[in-house]
Image (cartoon, rainbow, N blue to C red; front, top):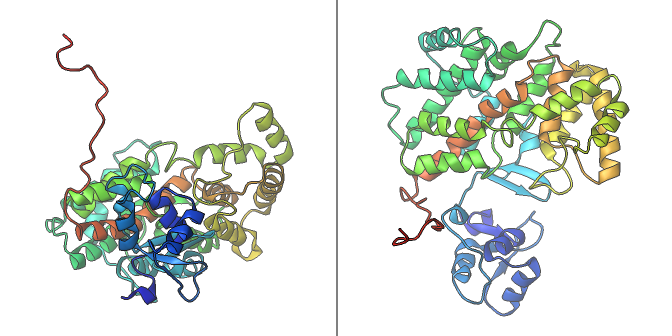
Length: 402
């Protein structure tokens, strides 16, 4: 594609971050002839050629930040800009009305086809289920996903083929295998249907699957998050798809990433009957209200907005008491602290509104993110291998001390 399509171009904010300067300084570089600004239809502000920015970053005229391989990762997968999330240039919120399979295929290939389907081997699904039955009944869903990925990999002798076509095929099969193993139903169900089987309770309204489908799409990728960076490091060693997914699962298995919704769920569970009282107790303890604000978004989290919008629609059967309590908390916290609910808050509300497994947010996050990890691995396989050898700064005992 050409620059007219926006590929290999950086926004003003991205260029400023790369150069370690303020956005105003970027335009000063333009006026001095050091950078060339371009306008693209439908894009707010100017954009800049990434190679030109990289060249300037190496000159003394730009006040560079310390950089390494991470800052040089070029990706065509996900853009977060002006409060919106885009997959390959398409608004993720608009894509969230499509099936998870179709969006996964789009994120991997750039081709958006309705009715995309994956296939799996029922025998492998059964072997995964048998392995999961050996786990503690109290184990978390992410443990089940990890085991299912490892079991499935042993039945794929050609998993070491990191070619584009092979990886896309394997990724679709892996997603369906894991979802079916978790759900316990037919291996021919859509992924969202299998996941719903795994998390629902007797009281769950089946119309919640509409919200689940959207949530899976909205969690599919979020740029170079910690787990995605871990995946790209693994892919740079030419680790196979199953190994890179394991690397990603290892990175999200922490309270600051994949499990970030846990404290939100615990708080909301106490707030359903008396949201104002729960808020007062939380504030009196000196703890912040979990599930608000974001390190990337400044005004709104589009993923949270869409999930919460769907939950408010009576047609989707969410518990109105839970939704009302969540809205009360949102109104109070947003007005008092000038902040906004994030995806952790939305997923915790979704979980409580349908009486789902408590670790549902973590499960959805882990399973959905396999889509983004696969896409980033495909990009990384096309780069020079082993490019993440980062030089450390030694601060230990100096030689000759003893």
